[in-house]
Length: 152
Image (cartoon, rainbow, N blue to C red; front, side, top):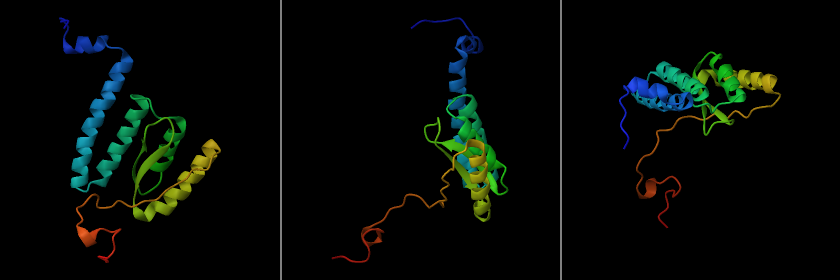
């Protein structure tokens, strides 16, 4: 293993800028995830939404996996009253955004984002509305939703 006599900062400065940007994204994304867990535990949707925005900016600027269409979708979303946060999701390079929206603002969100996106790109987006569920839980026997009440 080669040794060097450089300080950490000097060593990092010698890494190509692209490597430093990718590493910065990964490190700051890990920090955001930990903050997001705390925000959810404390039911702080505003903080969680801000973290979503920071995540999108990092994916766009440091990891460079966003695209103009996703950036537009996020920009349109965060302008709508009742939207806490928005970010790209998936593998990047096109695809989807995920948006945290107050239930009372969903219809306004759908209309404004869809019309703004169509004006900006010439393409009509698909907007899916979903509601968060409790997540994974343990079910036994007749409690399984797909088994019904019959033991036959």
